[in-house]
Image (cartoon, rainbow, N blue to C red; front, side):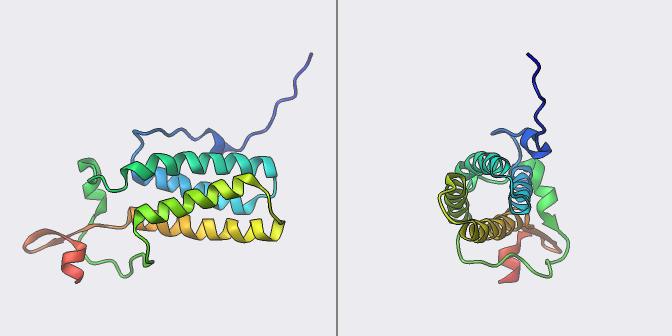
Length: 153
């Protein structure tokens, strides 16, 4: 019996696991959320929600961990950023919101207009979450490296 090959979206094959750097995981989340709002295929949407859920679930327990030493340099700048992500929730709450929305979208039990709005909300939340996770944390000063929050306050 011949089988018909099934085309899969490249994002469904992107490898990640608990050892993946949080900056890489959050970039994957951005890509999953963007592709989610750009597609109408329910099967692909469900698969993307699954991938997004998996990446967020890996991120969630590590959000309050110290930044790994090998990422410190990439999150250190010489001048204060012109703007920084602003939104009320802490990263732990924001990740929980994204997980809840992802799981709700995967259930597919509502109108297409509601699904569209929830997908856009998830997209915006993921982009904010990613910007917050990838934002510089330290600033080089004449007195040495300092937390940006100490300098900007």
